[in-house]
Image 1: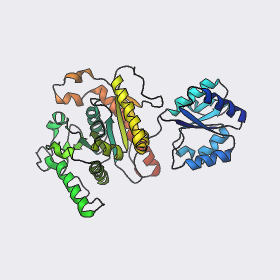
Image 2: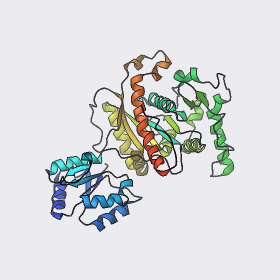
Image 3: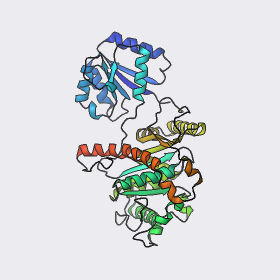
Image 4: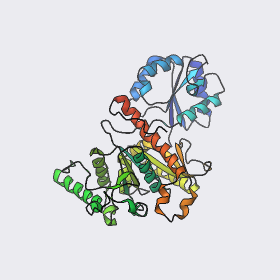
Length: 405
């Protein structure tokens, strides 16, 4: 179980004691752990020690402590905060926690703030390609539909996009076959592009030992342009055995090569549900994850089981996934009726249920739903634009706001 970590800072030691005593005896005591300070130096030292470790999920502090911390690096730490206020300070109401109110109300506010989505860790320093994995613990959650729509919306927004399908049985061909072209002509070489690239990468690795080397860092000749999708794509592998033989390292190396080639702003990665090697490679390598959930008991249970297994067997991957994942309900119908598998989880977005997709007879229909396109556009903006704001602040890119309506 995840234990939320909160830091409480107040000069009033009796106030701290009352708060901690209440939490200790409450039903939330197993879900949240408080570390409290009444002096600035102790608080500052604690926060400095957390750098590079697991930072707290929330800081609740009186104004003099909070303002000092924010001006000494707290503002850029990514840690959410609340000002423990007596009502006189100028602060956004969403960031104000009135100091004197019933303790159950205070604790509810803290639990809610801890569960708010923190800015995800997006691209690695020096990297300009954003790899987004569309994943799920349940089959049939709509990964391919969401991934294709994301690729299309990013392409329409002016980004250079590559869509990569890593499913054992590629389900995209009926939807994309008409648009597989380059300048209106068939390209037999590109139709074997993914197979050749996987082979070239393996040969390059064998020849260079541990270092991945391919003669040119380019995907030209391997990919095809899909005009309807506004993205580059690989023609689906004709030999499923090649996909089944891909290891976790093969997948990670492929994704790193596609990232390092510098030809794309975004990679959209679409794979199987479960623990196969390709899925693990995506989980290891993607900068952001769109984790899809359906609002039914089975899907919620599988989501919880995946997290429980990962927490027990691979805690490093588990923490990393939570840090990068946006949890999204797909096929949403007015409200979420099933309880999330764990109280510390939250939902970041929803995507609507489209009844007409139940009996698709024309491949173009799936890519042309205005309602779905609108919500996917918002999801893309949440993922990519947040990353761009970070990059703009460091001066690494200069792009206009492509999402302005």
